[in-house]
Length: 52
Image (tube, rainbow, N blue to C red; front, top):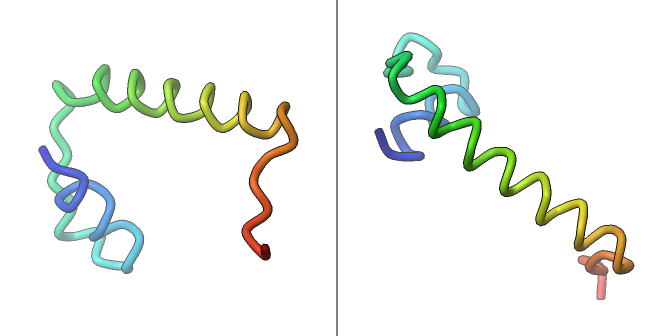
């Protein structure tokens, strides 16, 4: 499953096009956790000023 298959339909209101396979859930959680950890580390260091 690609991010396009997983997130695009959900984020753009086409839930009927979402291709969910429970087999992908552990991978989703692992990637989501890694992103959350990286985002938290960035925020703890002062983050990134998107307005600059």
